Length: 466
Image 1 (cartoon, helix red, strand yellow):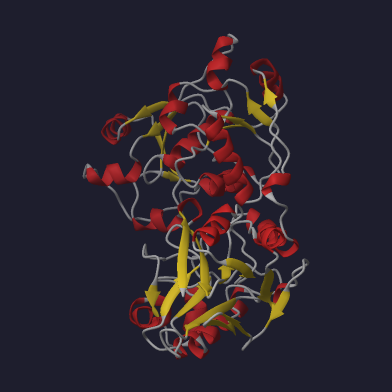
Image 2 (cartoon, rainbow, N blue to C red):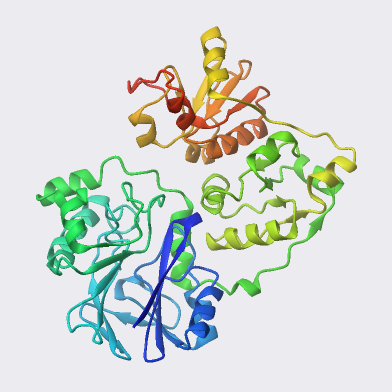
């Protein structure tokens, strides 16, 4: 059997292609499906089947386009209520392809319709070889239980406990585990960096599987959940109905500098996808910087929302195309265009250019000691609780979708995250909101710790938003 994992780092998403005797199966495909078609061609196999382990909330799946281009059948858990041609599957459903087979386990918990896929390769053994666990079981974690509008987190957590202990942990220790996400995904909160594991390893090392009591499991799984981005529920609905092919998206319109200036005056959003340093050196005033180098699409969807129609600012056609695809992966499909000629054209038009001041952690420490400065931490809650700068104010980046933090607009503010990526986003959002004296801390909390500067784990009331 041929088996390949495709890992999309920017979304921490894993998808899979399995094939035997020329017949192939794709599991949890990403939005842009060319990579599966190429792999199938390269290995001389034909994609006949597509499985979705559940209705993904953090990205838009390419199952409908892949089925249209290959004639493959889509399989989903019966509880999904999918509204496109597919086969509903329930516990015990088995698909044979060549000398391999997939057996479905219904494993509600992360979502009501979640399924896991037990893979057997009869060329090697009659016993199960691997299980594709979707978002039910991760490496070091399990799926979050708060993504269903019809169930409470406690109800889903209880179902997840039953699925794990009643089904997955009944498998042999040597069965390989391949999840749909890795470290960095918001579908869990404690994932390790490895891309695969075994049932035995997870039985021994996964914190969630060490919890013996169903009641304690529910209590732990429903406490301290990471913030759920607003776009999650919308992506799940897109996946329920099926997304259009990427080729059907409208072409981007070129926008002159003068026209963009007028659009910005009317409240338009300009999304600068260049690097943090390029943005800091010179940018279109009131533009938002979310660099392509990080979790670009997830943060764009989180802080701007799926209904935003930003004008893109980039340095090349390649950057524009990459941004377009990555935004489509999370459901941002309609854009108002792009700045023709980029920031260079803006400057040539004689329009004002903004900058973003930056300083090192040592400079930040010195200025905090001198007084008059505010320090804003935009990391997630678990990061903040593990350690933070004394007297820092806290407003996680995902909260910027609600409102900017309530800070003293007359006092300078230094903004930091873990490394500098999220803090640049936050700094640009603060500048867009009218803050005049914003400074980005380069290197972030990692650099602060490396410099052995003082920190605390005290938990005063430091939320600085409405």
